[in-house]
Image 1 (cartoon, helix red, strand yellow):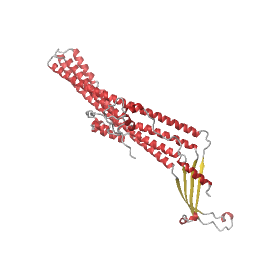
Image 2 (tube, rainbow, N blue to C red):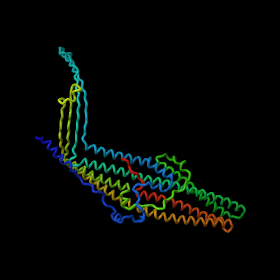
Image 3 (cartoon, rainbow, N blue to C red):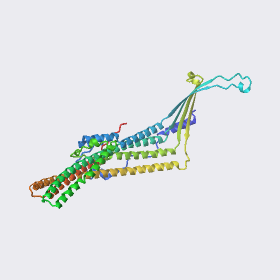
Image 4 (cartoon, rainbow, N blue to C red):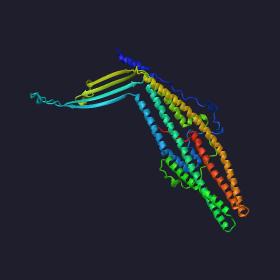
Length: 477
């Protein structure tokens, strides 16, 4: 006749297919109208979709920039921090998976015993002490808690989603870092170009000051004219120091992003270079592709899935738990006799436990888990709406800046022609020194604005790819 405990164990084991807690049916639909429209309000309808992961900065055609971005993605402390968190999350998943498997332990013991000589204690003749007694023990213990109601499966589900969220967060760190490096590099080249322009303008104005001083000595120019050209020269010179300080700051920022000490890139990047060139066209993903590709959205969705699974993990504490424990042991006075059948003992214990009266502890933990799920769901909605806002704003800024750069280049060309004509008139004696300086100042301002406009377009280009969640690499393992 089958023992009742074993029947009970088998019956409960049949319930192991049950899994308590709400099943996860995906993230809630957010921004349904935008998704139904199939495009962002300011997206180019003719633009092609971008891939989920792309080294978009290579399209700028600057090898030094490519090297810096690659160094940052490899060595940045932010990347190393995200990688460490991913390893922790994966270790947590492995731990939860191991918790659902049987646990086996082994003990090997050797005992050597000699009893005392009692004759010395009693004064009689007891025959002396017993010779050494040897005993060898081998013991194997096993235990397994059956996952009757799916608590362990829900814990594994939660840990798996958490590890996937950490992987997406690593990808998001890569996205942020790539854009930060590009923008810092563009700032550096912008500042260097404007400093070179200031130096050239200051040199020209210094020549005008000398010329005006000579004319003043001959009585041809007035003291007022000399003061005016001197003031303009000093004003231009005053722009050098802030730009030099900005250059140092940009160099240090790039060094830290690449996990280098401040100043480590000074010699390598101190020589001015042209700004990178923005590609003629920028493909833009539609909202559906954006939701699938952007890493922070994927991370928020995986966090929601993990929070949902944690509810089932807590609900399983309401139900009984069945554990199977077994022991197999051998003992003998000679190690070679340990494996004999008659020297062995075994024990099998099914154990059923049920925390039937917990005064609301399980209910409170379930309520807390449900609150965590609701928080994760609200966070997901916030991340999706914020991503759509970022992408739409970045598209608008980039499109307007492209138009602005065209106007700035037209203004630069026009001011250059005006300065050339004024110089010809000055050489012919039909224009004053102040007329020439005024035309040069206008040309200088126009060129400064054009350089700043090109730099801003590049920064907006980086911001656009950052908003679209591009620049991450798949994580191995």
